[in-house]
Length: 396
Image (cartoon, rainbow, N blue to C red; front, side, top):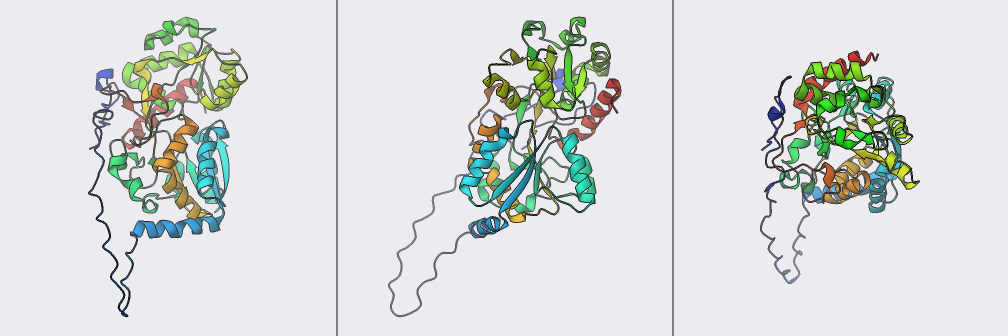
């Protein structure tokens, strides 16, 4: 049973936040059926017709036919929301090792606000550069225009659609109202805020009101409030502190806004800002490998953290490599695919048989969270947050 209570309204207190009940307690029991009985010995041939060999399950037959069809496609074109392509490279490398002969084209975008217009523009021109896209914001335009097709009919492996393999069941992953187009395979606590410890002390930032200290005026940089790195944060501010708090924060603290999350990360490393949202871990790790950015840390304000299902798979209406796309999404949602994915992104999978790779963003048992990104019931509230945030920031 889905234990998320997603019917919050504006003005709710922290106590009213979404309860993630039982998510990390006993969990769902694996559906373990009895072991298959051994096959009876073959009957001796007596000149008649040999007994027919046991037929493979339908899904195995479909899988065995799909693999050569995907290799015949020979290519797969993907678009991901990420600031560094290398962040997903291990998952793609593992896929190519498992299915050699399929070339992968990977396009990187900083936000759904940049990818969605491209998808929509190409759809209107009957052009499809991508077979699949992976994004969590800005999807409404392509959906309304018919640029996307349902993924649900393409998922057929029993180890993918088995409820017992997924936190709160397989169906929780559907992120569109029809529950058949987009599938979310991650679920993590989103801690949005980062600090340059050379410029600020994390002990000074433990509660929402600490963010209103005049000393931080002009020293904050944020992702555009219409992007996935910020709209959940702004929604959490509205729900836990009220719209007056959000108005005061944006109008008095005067944060700088950008859609370029790589730029935000660089600005933090270079000491241009003390606080920020939108820092990209893969980009930060690039700097840290060079001995830079070791002073950039996350800091946690519980009232402003949310649950995020930010990694979502969508399939274009007319993929140029349909068999490769179908093979990829089925493989990606298997245990092996999710292990490769989590090792690439350092974000935790919803699959219960995949080890936690990042405890700092794992769901805590019994804790209440506001579930924003990937929650179909919160779409209207998120859209409201985007509008309010953009208006307060004076963004067009």
